Length: 320
Image (spheres, rainbow, N blue to C red):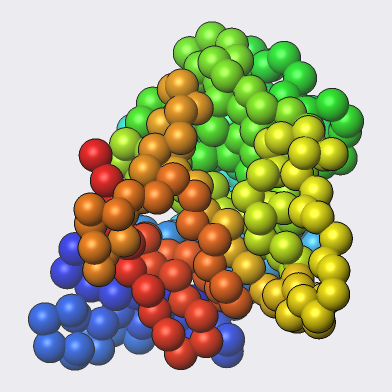
């Protein structure tokens, strides 16, 4: 597990060791043993390193001086649930979110500034941090906004999904919250909680992943089966069904449907308008939906998209 600052890489081992590596030459500047051991979360703001731990059935946050490697504080949280998120805010607080609570910590002295009890259980995919608020969905239907300075609940959004217990993913993109459920997608105004746009009854072939770019959000769905069916997921079911294979093409069509596909879309977050994606090999050929055979994953590098298929990497650049 690793986290980076401008001049250093901080890494933790499964045995609880934490060490600092200088990026210019790879020199290990310091190494310490942590107790309790570093858990599943590690983050830094360049001045402090924070990590999650577990001690006596309670979540614990350790704070380490990034320059010296000295363990400065251990903060025990009033929760018997493990941490889902650990991050530094723009105001300098350390935000620790468990399944049932959220805490703002002053890293200089370990003081817990505020604690907010969530309205239900939360998982890491449903948690999103903006410049001045924490956004979390505890039921897969609505989104709560919690003020980062006070811990106060500012608003709860209207329903973003038709049924509870969906797997909601949220991303902050260009001052808009974009949320995707199992069969729904919506954008929310972070100031008011109003729904800017929504799309329902989407027939994802698999749970949608969201990747935030500076000016757009990339929606990635994956699954086994017909890629054309997945690409037409926002159309009525009868229209999206492909014709049944006939004659000697049946085996070829069956083989095509058994492959693993990635379907990639790029959307303007405030309007939901679909934006083009250009192939790096020929930027003149702009596509609005990528259907990639046997895709294993999608990554963002320097504002472009990389799709990995086994040992092959295909690059795409954003089209204006």
